Length: 123
Image (cartoon, one colour):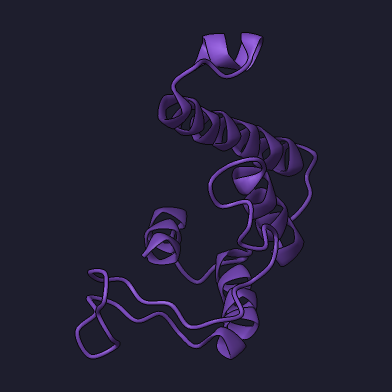
């Protein structure tokens, strides 16, 4: 991965794309740490910027990086419908409001200890 970051992708496309995703995670982490290190608050703009950074040039770059989803998705096996899926996320129209709720939940002063708030936000 470090070699690819310095010299560019190698000849194995799958490995190159896997490595690029790891590179993007590191870049997004650094972007987020820089943002917080400057004393800027967590907000929806940052979340969307991190999402955009994660997908730049990767297999997901055609999925509207930096934007909330606009179609219903589900977690399950290929071909599953909503009744067979392991998890059905909220409808896309609800996502902006729910993301705002999430940001509000993790923004100090919190009602919960930071570890508890982190665990709930992660879930």
